Image (cartoon, rainbow over all chains, first blue to last red; front, top):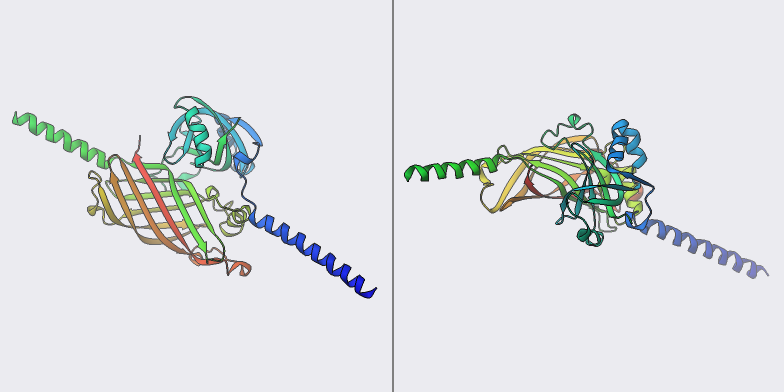
Length: 154
Length: 184
């Protein structure tokens, strides 16, 4: 009777330990969010993105931070070597969409300079705001929003 | 005839000079770091480095958004941004410097040129003067610049919690690679 009770306790502890180990393993090895794995939380045009950033940069930047957002706009540049597509967002404003090889291969035959595109990606920030503070006078004063792990937004 | 040849040479020289003085830029430079001790993979890659290089003066600048780094694990990404780099407070890392042996580089001629770069590196809101070796490869219209160097976490006030001191090194190896084109 006494042994049966101890066996039950040990078994329970073992199961709890096993579940905990699985949860910890899952947390440690969980891959970061990519745009391809998820639906965008917000869909907007390139102009709308920058209108939002221009009106209140700190607030908008924090809202979009690390979120999957989809952006529609016109293709300004294609860097096939480094797998980037730049979307025009107005005068001296661009959205830099970076892809991995797999996702870029899905998009490259369907995009062209001056053509429309709808891309989703994880927003990581925007350069060009407060540049005068850091003395980077050679780097273009263009405002460049950055999206990583991009993919086509169907 | 002589006048035509002299004029042609003058035009070619002018074009070469002009090509050499035009600012070189990139929006897709790469930065990679390794801060592991060998126990765990503590590496990250950023594929959207902004950089500019003035071939006439040797001035070089880099700007990297910290949140642009990609990792193999969600947890590592969170720790990197929230605990180590505090990227909400210090969203960018920058370098502003100069090639000190510019006379050894000919941007008008294809070739591989070892360079020494000196300047101010800012990480985690802390600026330090640094000097490092690099390589510039000129090939046709494009100029490729790369460098590898090591930074010490303490120098940039990046705190390493005791819990992870076995996994996280006190130094980080950094590699930068940029392929420049003439600024439009």
